[in-house]
Image (cartoon, rainbow, N blue to C red):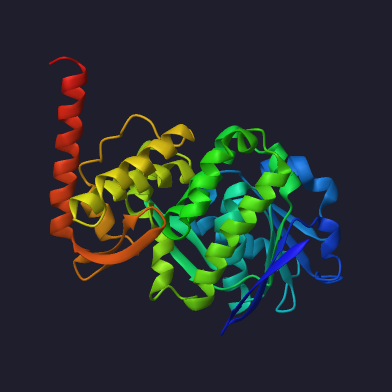
Length: 355
């Protein structure tokens, strides 16, 4: 088992790579443990849960609401939880978001940690301290930044993941490569067959490299005031696609990355050959396909996104695969790009249909 430490002003968080639940016995309290999980994870892994009170929620994005967090706080209170209690989120990205936020709010904060069961949560959602729920159609608007004491990433759990969820995790891995590590980007492409077969050897190596990218960024900027914004690559448009079309998160992010790369070229930052490289490799990985039209109210949604400030957006653009920057773009400029994008897409479809 390998460990990666993230030290911030709020304390130390340890990412345990390749361990098992048995490795947690010395890290968990003898009593006062509250395990937050979902119906899918509970069905598969309940037999190996540590001893504690199990609080189960419905699986899926629909559970990421303030009401679910309030209900969990009530259930903990009714079960006798107090300031000494410990919350263990046992599941994928949705569970980790909800468990982290519940622990952050209950009695103004209790200790918490995660057992991460999905690829997306092992490389992204459970790492870095962001905890949040949605407010209607707006993603992660209500939340905190509070580091878990530890995150256990048992790669053997990935064998039970549905293909759609596994692919979603790959979207976030490609994101890390696209913003910081060109070699990782090409290694992902070269390892496509072994990844598809879920070879634990190659997956363990790729997950470790991906986590190191995120951990290094979070150490430098835990509160997202600067370099951590790079981790939002693909998310501004991706969140809109995710909610509007009901896509899995990582797939929506991958498609948002392609749109952001096209915006990067439109804004004079990214050579066309680099845009093509990103788009082709994501398509070969099964993450992108036919382009979706951006909905008419896309700018209105972006204006209420967490990345918007005073009529502009801290937007992550590419200068090359492996090199990202943050550039402030006005909502007016983004609207001009959206008009260009949708018109270009409509013209392309007309040509393909022989009109």
